[in-house]
Each structure stands twice: as structure tokens, then as C-alpha cells.
Length: 549
Ligand code: SIN
Image 1 (cartoon, rainbow, N blue to C red):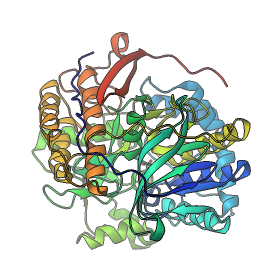
Image 2 (cartoon, rainbow, N blue to C red):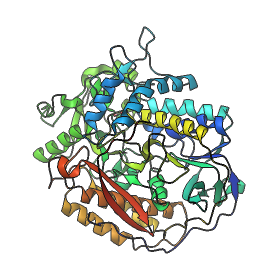
Image 3 (cartoon, rainbow, N blue to C red):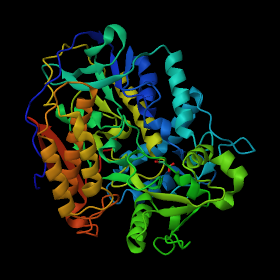
Image 4 (cartoon, rainbow, N blue to C red):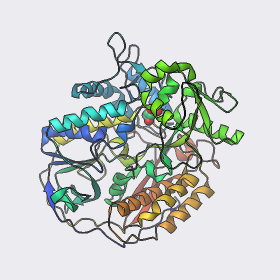
């Protein structure tokens, strides 16, 4: 493998912890995965949730479409599995997918028992819709298109009612390990939380990483400002294996709000197409027809590529969604969030076409786990978007992510119940790598979008890598949240670009214009990234299913 990744010379380091606290299980992150893990892990001991902003600020809250599970009449876990494997383009771990689809329906019911309310049909059954790549209606939703907000509401309330301790405004820095290398805590940078202000440490018997995604490595993304890849960066610094980073999903239909728009962009859920909206160009041509048998409801990578190809063919800046035929009542009832965000940008989808273009949405790769959420570092678990459980393969099936967060968080709690080691004292922290200047964030995001975005090539990735190497020489002068975020973004962007450079094929959501076909002979396998002494290393591992638990 080529080593396109730069090294990180040690420069500025974070201060020593000024305070310390303890919990048996430390959960990093407060989305569906983190809060589910926290609620279930109460049975094994004390739990502390650490979150970067406030409890309901992560990506879960923004999820619109819903949660996929074989809940409908005539649907089966086997059919859900087939659809997931097709979307994953040969790289899903079949055992992990089997776990997801068979345990999924029960996990959704347990979520409802916690208090999440899904939309219902007139007969009281859960209303199910379709999204790209699903051959059945199996997406449960809430508040029309506010599914994540409802799940977040229910879980946050349950966490408060359970009296689980929470530290908010806390950026996780590094993993603490005992002298045998087992995870036994984390260091944090906390802003404005009284006695726990500044750098501190939480000691514990296990650490569950549920820190969310890394969409902010790109300049245009559906992810909130906080999604800076902190969990993957921490895991790399701790020596954990990270896999499939090149498989970043670009959501096909993100509201196009103007040329060069940057930062978090409004999503227009796939469910809008699931309910019958059409993708058209400026002449009203339905360009997905004929590109895939499922047309506009093809898997997400295929629709994103279809849009980008049509943009290239026509010289337009975006395509359009046409859902005028829904009418005012359906828009207001079924998609109130999207209706409001379109109107806030001067578009009335009841009368207007909705301008859309792809933007970074979801990291299919992440911190590699087994079927119980265990990473390659003993005592460190991962679930949710930060994890690579094997479920997503080269391209996540729509609305499988909330389900994955639920199912694998529950599995982690079960594993903790079987095997929570005694309290251990941390050896000295591994020590963070040098911190980078907060000002690199925007140039980094632009370089990633330009060279490692939807369409990639050896040349574009080499240029991105060159810019990243240059940005990596800009040392930070102040160990604050912004420098940590910039450093984490730089670590994950460098790892992502290196993997995308190495993978000389097109598969799932990794699209190389210089290698336009999938190459099963040389590339049906995973690129696994590790970091040692500040240097990233990539290894290719041919596809091999995980063992049945
Ligand atoms: C959407 O509503 O289109 C997003 C759902 C997902 O990312 O799975």
C-alpha cells in the first residue's frame, strides 16, 4: 500500500488533568447509541455520559427519514438483510448484518418502551415508508420527518429520569489505559462546568465510544458543527484499528442553498422520494429513469452518482426534487421539518421545485468492532456512527444507522454484564500528538471536498494529501476545543484521504473516476488504519466474515 499519510510531529500538548472523577462505565456521546448504551449499562454499575455539547445536540437529533426494521406485514429480517447486503456492495459482514436485522425489531420495540412515539396508521399499527434500496416499506418515522428529534427526546428524558450522571460541553481528548493497555478512562476538556472546568480525567472500568461522525471534514455536510471525528481520532491515538474510512456516504438530496454554501446544510429526506417525489433536471427530465431499475429509489450511492453525472452533463449547479403533487396538506403533515427549512430558504415545495445536490452525510467506516462492540483495544467499545461494526460495508442502506446504534449499544451492555473487569489504575496517558492551529479547519474542509469528495481520482487525492501535509505543519498555540477539533479533523481527514487514494476501484460510495469499476479480485477487502508514534499506517485485509457469536 502506498503511504499517502503524513506523520504528526509532537508539538503543543494538552495540560495535565486538573480534576478527576469515577464511573464504572464511561459513555462518550449522547446520540441514540450512547444514550441506549448508558441506559442499558446501568444494570452493571455506575454510568457517566460525557457529551461535547448538550445531551441532544448530536447527529441523531437531525435524522429525518427514520429507523429501518422488518416490522411490517409481509416483511422479514431476511429481506432486510438482502437489501442491506446489496447496498453494501460486497463489503458488509454478513453475521453483523444478521445480528442487525434479527435483533432490530425487538430493539425498536424496546425503544418504544423507553418512550419514543412513532407515527401510526389509522388502525394503530406503525406507519412504514420506503427509502432508497429498500424493497419493502420498513422505515418507521416520528413527527413526520422528525424521527431523530423524537428518539433523542425520549432517550434524554429516560436518562434524566434514571439519574444518570452527565458531563456536558466536554470534548473527549485521550484514552487512559492501565499498564497492560486496557482502557480505564479518558481525559476531557470541559468548558464552564464549575468545579469541573478545564482539563480533567474520568476513570472507569470500561469506555464506550459513541462520539458520532466526522462529516465536518468536508465543507458541505448534513452533519452538525460538533461532528469532527473526535472518536475516531481518539481511537487512532490509542492504537485502535479503524476500517473503511474511504466509504463516506454523500446524501443525494441536500437542499442547495446557493453556490459555495459551506457548513451544515439542510437535508431533504429520502423519504420524500419514498413517498413519490421525482428527481428532475432543469428541463423537467427524470434522469434516474433507466439508470437503475429502482430509479429514484436506487441505493443512495447510485442516486448521488446519477445527480453528479447529470450535473456534469448539463453544466448545472444542482438538480431538483419535484414533490409539488404532494399538496399543502401532505407537506404539512408528513414533512413539516423539511417544509419549514425549504421555506426558510425562500422555496415553497408546494409550488416550487426543490434545488438539491449531494453533500457529505455519513461515515460508513470507523472504529473497528466485533459483534459485541469490542474494539481492538481491551476495555474500549464503540457503537453508532463512530464504529465500523461491519453492517454498512461500502455503502449504508438508508435508515439503518439509528438501528445499528440501538442494536450494538444493547450488545455492548450485554457484554459489559458478562465481563466488566475490576477497577484498574491508569498508567501515564499515551500523551496526545501535537495540536494544530484552529485556523486550518476551513482550508482542510475545502481541500477534502475538492479532492476527496463525491468524485475522486489519484490526482485529486494527491493534491488533497499535499494540502493536508502543509496544514499539518501549522502548530496550535492554545490547547482549547478549537485546536483539538482541528487536530482531530486533520487526523481523520488524512486517514480518509490515504485510504481513498489507496483503493483503486469504484465501490459503494467510494467513486474513483480513474478506476470506474469494482475490482473484486484485488479490492474485495478492507483498508485498516492504525496510528503509532503519530504516523498513520494502512493495511489491506481481504474480505472475511466475522465468526458467529
Ligand atoms: C434521510 O432521511 O434521507 C436520511 C436517513 C439516513 O441517513 O439513513
